[in-house]
Image 1 (spheres, one colour):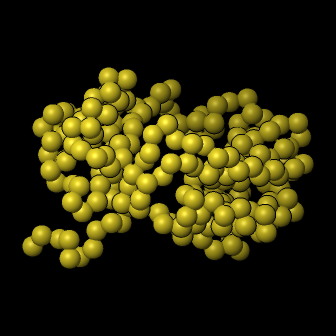
Image 2 (spheres, one colour):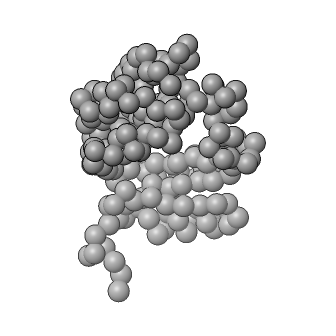
Length: 200
């Protein structure tokens, strides 16, 4: 496919409510979007990197730099026929997986449009629907968290992931599991625990 343009946009999205994890509180997201134009089609890719390199070594700023300085020019100089060729094209650049995926996803989007099929079907998906879940951040109290989970389950979400950190963990999980013993429940501490937090 011929790459006619690669356009990057940074969106600033205020959150409906603050989202707290072990890293701190997020009130606004900086989202990097890539728009790739190819032979009359437009594909979109979203960068999942956070604003700062806490969750991984990447951030919104580092992804922007990697795409504009390295990955974008590589893609433009060696246009892929399909998304599966992107890892080979990007191989000289180490790491930067989220930045690479931003462009690769846009290429897959274009390919799905070109083939006239859903993106799910194109990459081998066999389901028409998938069970969706919600993430509940750290709250000021357990009752506040329980109210949020109750609202999300009533809305039809089938999985709940709880953010946790030392001091906001075992009791929280016990209260949630006792209240809803049958839900699919997971927890995520974003690497907040260290060896001294282990109970031996």
